[in-house]
Length: 500
Image (cartoon, rainbow, N blue to C red):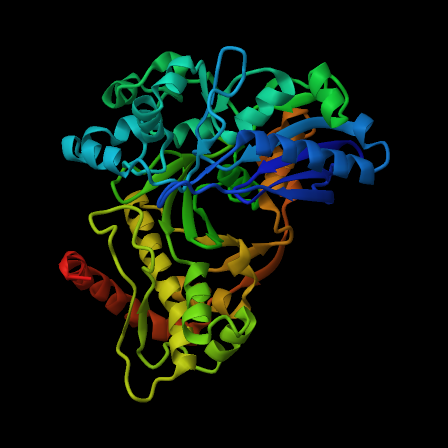
């Protein structure tokens, strides 16, 4: 072991992961336990917080067993977790509902529509930092108030997933400002709960957990938790952060002018700034170091390739085979365009957007169609980059890529050339775990500030530069993509009105 250890916990949508990280940010051992996502009806998505806790117990015991003397060498525990999952507990810290609606739960669509009908974005953006969307816990609380009034009445505190784990570890209740800022209920200027937003949604201020900074020591492992998990009683536990802000930190995205792209099922592009960007097209999340990450999300990022594998090949080809076919086509796919809106859009007036190919000719084949998907996702993300650059006035100088899509060399080369800026790929793909280690290293005084800890813990395995020849092809195609995007919007409502 290199010095003291951090125990990092990541409560994800698919699994809980726990890891021991050394003083240089190296992950010594990591363990994961999957948990179920419950879908009671179409559009709903929830999980049992009790399952998260069981995953924490199992994975921590597993990593402690694999590293000698780990229990006595843990300096601090830092957790991050999936955002927006709305957990209700009573005044004894016990769950009042066995399940919590998750970030991807859409049961609040009607509440969002009702809110948007009454309130224009410019009337509330400065108080919430975000436009309305079903993801936000503020709308989830409205639904719970109206549809599970007994649970809402008995609720003493509303928590996010990592906060519930911290409660089980320490007996203390708090929410950090990265999760709070993505609730639709926190004033971005003060970092405190917004009385205006709480009143607009008709919620109870007394039920909202105290807001604290991620690096503060929340409390210490209780005797009961120590026995159940195998930890040392009294081990410090940080307030922690949402998983996305933790991953931004763990990938080195902590300065204005630096962007992040996370390519998983979706594609999230984030630009760090010292203030939130108040625009109806943009969402904002507080960052661990105290900045803001303005972000835009493309619902179908890696999912577009998953769709191609199913639709064109009935899942008989591997993803690498599809990328290999795409590599056979020339840059620009001979003017074939793919609009990657397979699952619509998260924000805006046309959330009912659809995907399409445009420009198909007799000379096009599967190779062109596959490459057009990779390029179409890149054009769609570049459209988001252009929006962020225009609003902020500070163009992105480089992007740090993470997620499964960052492992695809051709896609990274296409993106660097479409964006016309360098893309870096971190050595350690577990950016959330590294982010937790950076928080703990700073909180325990090993570094003077978070940026110094990031510089020590984060390095990069690759830097992909734009290909000048490809960029010359893609630049005019981007202009055409923007036109196609705009003109297609006029047709989506008409398409929805057609009989099925």
